[in-house]
Amino acid sequence: MITKLVRNNRSYRRFYQEVPIALETLKELVDLSRYCASAANLQPLKYILSCEPEKNALIFAHLGWAGYLKDWAGPPEGERPSAYIIVLGDTTIARSFGCDHGIASQTILLGAVEKGLGGCMVGSVKRKELRQALSIPGHLEILLVIALGKPKETVVIETVGSDGDIKYWRDSQGVHHVPKRSLEEVIVG
Image 1 (cartoon, one colour):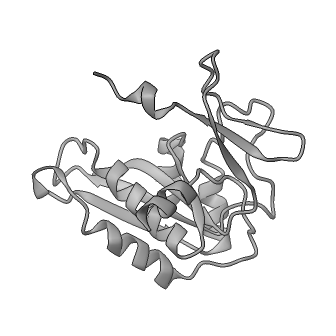
Image 2 (cartoon, one colour):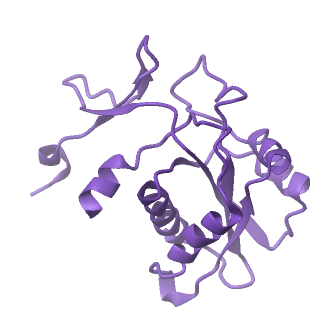
């Protein structure tokens, strides 16, 4: 079961925007993250949840999408996420957050896949502007934004070719292709 969840957990960037995600669903996903490993068990992560169109639009305006797709500014209206989870680090609890937010975010996304949803961890965030737009207190560091929704695109995994190119791309039908290194390449020794 975990194998299927991991393989189906792709970075989706286009969604059926009209399909809502309830606040209760977002809370269930964040609740999963509470059980994740945390350095020194400090548990410094906090979350802002959004499933309201107005707040979603505000968040969307401060995100960068798909750096390798130079001619694509992100999903158009109608294909945008229907929810977001902003992952924050509470600096009153810890000064750095190591990989806590990566572990928590992956767990949230696996939970989303289990619910028939998909998402994308977005690290390209205009942090200063988003902080101001949402009045996020200064002691909370913006670490990641997780975009969520019902996926509206097909993502295909391929093996990295002999040229070593790992850049994802879209074909003429809009299918998103993601090269992954082979098992033999990633195991050393």
